[in-house]
Length: 146
Image 1 (tube, one colour):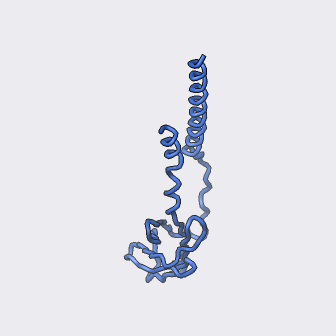
Image 2: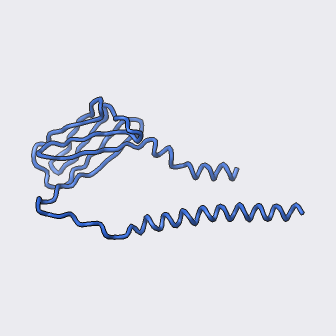
Image 3: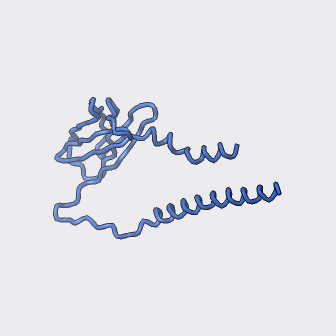
């Protein structure tokens, strides 16, 4: 039973990834263009697209190739939230921010991703903890038989 529980916990997140869809979108000259696709690269055909802007909410659908185009009435100064619904629990959202001025240089990312470092270290410690547990269990069961 413990092994079943261990395998369940290890593979628990995989079904969640099966329902993941991705959105790629750009906003230029009043037009919002993008595409929606599943984790394996297949297009999300006829997916509902909801676009939330400061000026209101707009709706469209993807075509057979998973692409969509939507003309927005005015230039958007703030972020655009895009939500895609592909049915049966498949949902994704993203936020487009306005482009920086043409002369602006985006800041470089020089900070250390501490969360990633500690996550990796925790994973390594966990793997070695499992190995130590099974080794200690094998040693104690070997002594009990003698």
